[in-house]
Amino acid sequence: MGTNVHLTAELEKFARDRVSSGRYNNVSEVVREGLRLLQDQEIARRSAEAARLEEDRRREIERERRKAALHAMLDRWAAMPTIDIGPWTRDELYD
Image (cartoon, rainbow, N blue to C red; front, side, top):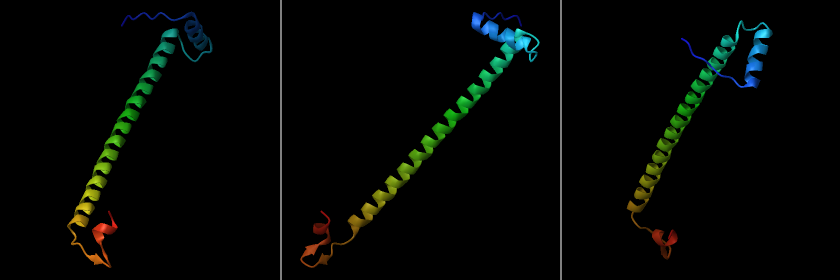
């Protein structure tokens, strides 16, 4: 594959310094390593985003479950017969 990459002077110097250090054989190896790191970073970002979306979904399910439980409790409470407690009824006490 014949891709040409134009680097800023600063990046060109950095890449050539990496080659001079002996860690890489040429500038192309430095660029490939940089792209691999960028690829890893993108995979990690996507994974974090998927985890965040899953957590949001889980929280919404839990919120709906709690809401349904509250409504069920309130329905049971409303269905209870009114009882007299001294001069007041339960409904009067909790209005």
